[in-house]
Amino acid sequence: QQQVKQSPQSLIVQKGGISIINCAYENTAFDYFPWYQQFPGKGPALLIAIRPDVSEKKEGRFTISFNKSAKQFSLHIMDSQPGDSATYFCAASIMNYGGSQGNLIFGKGTKLSVKP
Amino acid sequence: NAGVTQTPKFQVLKTGQSMTLQCAQDMNHEYMSWYRQDPGMGLRLIHYSVGAGITDQGEVPNGYNVSRSTTEDFPLRLLSAAPSQTSVYFCASSYGQGVGEQFFGPGTRLTVL
Image (cartoon, rainbow over all chains, first blue to last red; front, side, top):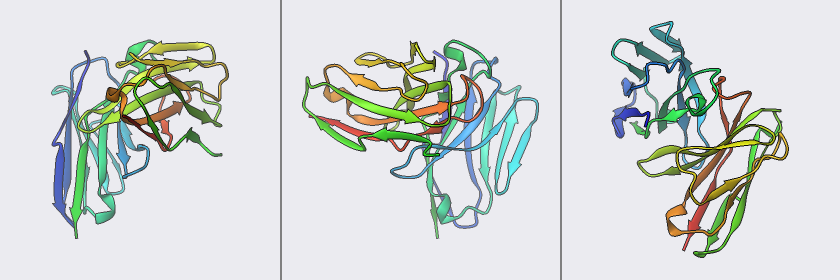
């Protein structure tokens, strides 16, 4: 069973601090790594995504770092704000691929709380 | 665009009852999927469809049926509800399988007594 392992399960950060969430994957064929953000009572929404041809992607305060050799990728939230409090899911898949490997495999999620 | 819509938002069933969770999208997406979300378990794929008339099983398909008669609709049927099916169910869609962003619906919270 292909897996995406996510840590930590929960994270408490002070306002203005850096939040870091890590994910590791097994299938070297994965070539699409998105992060989804979910607020309580809502469905997940795409936050940021990366392909393995780059080692880092930044969008505002959110950065994905990707380490292909270690089969790891992480989400960094700079200057964390109380409004960032949510559950974050990493995921992986093979783009443009039929069959089960074309489906997103999700990590188990990280509940982030940013304290004011 | 309404995006991905799901009905109902909440449902309580008794063990053995059947019901259908509705999902519709108005983005002309070919790929649709159903996930269940349980505490500490993340999002687990139940069934998915790559187009009208085509469905396949995901990671946790037992106890659920799906059909895809139109591009827009992808209902999920619970044939005989069990307490283990108590969960939050999300429908999602995207242009194609493994192609970019998946758009999620608001979810259905199901309790089976």
